[in-house]
Each structure stands twice: as structure tokens, then as C-alpha cells.
Image 1 (cartoon, one colour):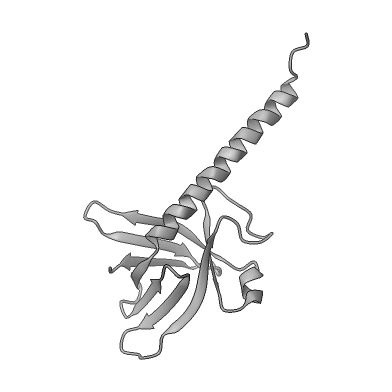
Image 2: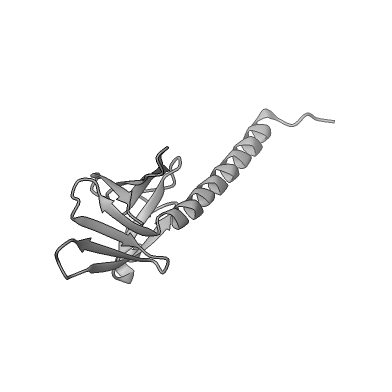
Length: 138
């Protein structure tokens, strides 16, 4: 009886590692889909707030202004050919049209974190590479 070759063993090991990695990303995405719901205040501009709803809408508010900007959002584990899955990156896709929904421009959620005092922060890198930090207000 022949022993399994090291190439077959390596391929099987790689398959199981990648499968586990994909499951971890899906679990993190589901966690963020729950945690992102609510109103977030910008740490850079206290007059700017963003609300993510359960129905997949993102509402942008500026305190003192009546107009609210609304668009749809999705959380994804990849974002087109330019943004394949990376280690624990969950992409934030905002769009108004079907064409925008399918393009490859996405922000990336770096983390949603609750500190020892119960303050929840959201860290996003925009599609242009700008770091945006928010604090949950509800």
C-alpha cells in the first residue's frame, strides 16, 4: 500500500484551512451586521451622525440641517476583483443604484469595539483610504 504523497496532504490541509477561514469571515460579517445597527456620531465632527438600519439603509445627518441623505448599504466579505477576501476584512458597500451596487468601490470595517466603560466604537477605512471613527449613541 502506497503512502499518500506530501502534495496531496498539503492540498487537503490547505483546503481545510481556507474553508475554516471562509466560515470565520461569514461569522464576523453576521456579528457586524447586528452590531452596526444604530446611530453613530463622528469623532472628527460631533455634528455629523450616521444611522445604519436593519432594512439596509444608511442615513447621514448633520445636526441643525433638515435634509437627510439616505442610501443603501451591504456588508460583504469581498468587494469585486480589486478587493478579494483578506484576513478579517468585512467590506462596507454603500450604493444608490444597481450599477453602484455591483462596482468594486467599498469601504472596510476595521473593527466594532466595546471598551471597558461600555462605549462602542466603529472604525471604517473609506474607499478612498480615510480612517473614520464613530461612537455609538444609541
